Image (tube, helix red, strand yellow):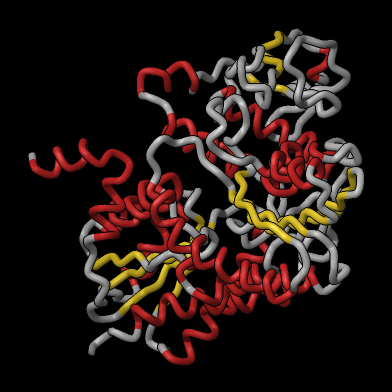
Amino acid sequence: MFEWIRHWRFGNQYAYETFFREQDRRPNGKTGIILSDLGMPESYKPDFYINFMAHVFNYSLPVFLQHFIFADRGIALIDPANPLARKPFVPLHLVDMNGSFTNREGRPYVDCEVTWRPPGMKKNPADHGYFLYTGDGKGGSPDACQKTGAKVVGWYYGHLLPEKKVAWEHQCKCVYEETVSTLKKEFPQTEFRHAHYTYEESLSQAVEDLLAKGCETIVYQCFCNPAYSDFEDYAHALPKIHTFAKRRAKIICADQLGNQPALREAYVQIIRNQLDKLPSQARILLILSKHGHPFRKETQDKRGAEYRVPLESEMRSLMEKRGGAWDLVWSDDEYADEYWDPGNTKLSTYSAYRMAINEGFDYALEVPTDFIAENTDLMILHAMKKFKAFSTYDPYEPVPYPDWEKPLVRTFREGKTTGIYAGCPVGPYRKYIVGSAVASLTEILSQVDK
C-alpha cells in the first residue's frame, strides 16, 4: 500500500525517486554493463518509428484516449510530393509505412479507393493529414504511427536524404566500441552489451546475456542523452531493465553523461572551432539549443540544470576570452511554439534566430546540446521549424551529409545575419563523448570488490 501511494504521488517521477535517487551504487560480484542508445537505424526500418510513436502516445495520453488514438483502421498513406498537407487534395503517388506504392495485388494505391483523414491535432499547425486505404484490411499498427512511418520513408528517405541513410547508428556504434575498448583495459572481467532502449527485446536480450555470463550486478548507462528524462530514461528504459532482471541481479543506473566535464567539452570545442573562422570583431548570438518537451512535470527540468548550468558557464568563459560583442541564449527546438507554449514561457530556436536577425547580429551560432549525432529529428523535423527563420531555407531541399566523421554544418543568410548550425560532436569530437562514458562508468566499476 505504501509503494502504491508513493507511485500515485510521484507519477512519472516515481522511477527516478525509487530506481535512481535511492539506489545503492556499489556493485556486488561480477559486473555487466549495458550501454544504451535510442536505436535509430542507419537505413529506414518501420519498426523503429512505430515503436517510438507508440511510446509517445502511451506515455502522453490517458488510457481512455489510447483506444481511439491507437486505432488501426487500414493502411495509412502519404503523398511524398505533399507530405504535410492539412486539407484534402488529389495525390500524385501514395506510399505506405513499408515504402510500398502498391497494394497486395500490385495496384498503385493512387489508383485505389482511398479516403482523406484530417490531422488528428487540428489546432497544431505541425500535424498533417493522410489517406486511408482499407481494401487490404488493417495496416498492422495504429494509423497515427503508420502515417509517421509513411512520411519518413516516402519523403525523408525518398527525397530529403540523398544518401538514404542517417548517421546516428554509426556514431553510437563507434562510441560503444571505443568506450568498451578503453574500459576493458582496466576492468577486463567486466561484461559489456550494446542495447537500444526503443526496443524492449533489445533491453531484455542484453539483460539475459549478462545474466548468462554470471553477472551479479548490471549497470545501465544511456550514452546518447546528456540529460536524462522521465520520458526516455527514468520512467521508460530503467523500469524495463528492472522488470527484465526480475531481481536476479542488482541494478545500478549510471548517471547522465552531462554531469561529466568531458561531455560538455565536446560542445565547447565545436563552438571554439567555429569562432576561429569568424571575424574577431563580429557580433555573435550564441544559441545553445535543447530538444524541448511538452510535459508539465519532468525530472529533466531539475536534473538538466546539472548539465546546462556549468555548460553555459564554460561557453560564457569561451566567449569572454574571444572578446567582441556577443550574447548567449538557450532555446528549445520543439514545444516552444504558439500551440504548445501559448503563454510564451519558452524561447524557441526559431525565435532565437529571429532575435539575431531583428537585432542585427552578424552571426547566430547554434549548437544542439542534447544530441551526439544527426538523426531525422535534427536534420529534418527540427530544421523545418527553426530554419524557417531564414528566407533562404527550403524545407523541400535535400540535405546531403556524405561524411559522418565531420559535423553537419548548415549556413543560412538573412539581412546582415549569417546563421550557422554547428552540428554534433562526431569524428574528432567523439573522444569527448567516449571520455565521459568511461569516466561515468569508472566511478562505479572502481568500487567493485573494495
